[in-house]
Image 1 (cartoon, rainbow, N blue to C red):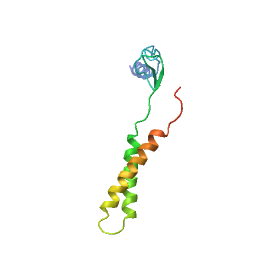
Image 2: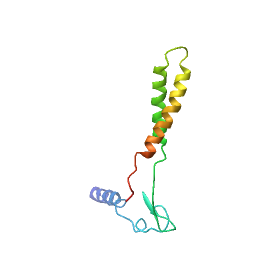
Image 3: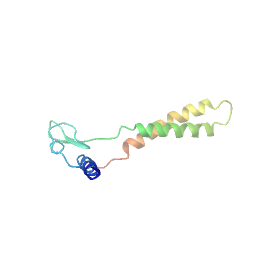
Image 4: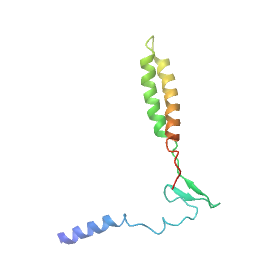
Length: 101
């Protein structure tokens, strides 16, 4: 019974690894990083910059708080977070300028 259970577990682990025929066709639907549009052109999945926005906002808030040393420091924190979020988003969106394959 133990050998049967091990063989069954090994078989169930290999099934998701096998390539599917449905992923190989380009019928206008999304099947991974690239797909073919209705006009026949190859389309690529691009990053939307969400991770860069969050990381940049946090880093900018810390930098703005450290730079603004007078008073409440809320203004420096808010301005630093806004500037860091915008810069981080642009860096994240433009970091993958490679052609899709």
